[in-house]
Length: 103
Image (cartoon, rainbow, N blue to C red; front, side, top):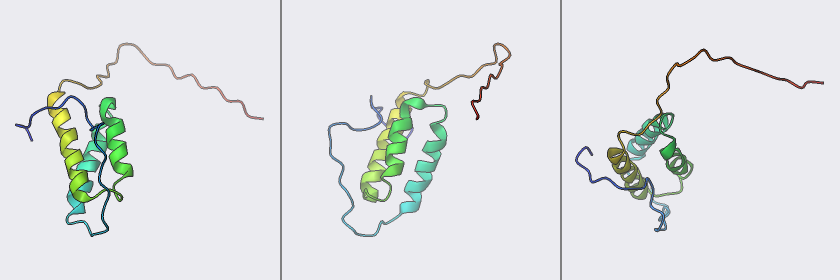
């Protein structure tokens, strides 16, 4: 995937996804592993969190082939946006303010 052509969006917006035809998936473990890794990545990449969560919600409804195509597109988007992410620095001491309204 390192040599993959980058895309400008993490998900396809113009295409209707094909749902499963009822046949058992060939290798759902690969898709679930990729999805788990992508969910971990979404902590520092909020630009892809919607696409990842959308795929996680439809893990049982979509066919494995369609799901893997969606994952590969997301990976191609990440190849083109390697410089994106959240940088958390300690600039000043943080103070936690909490309020409660309990009767």
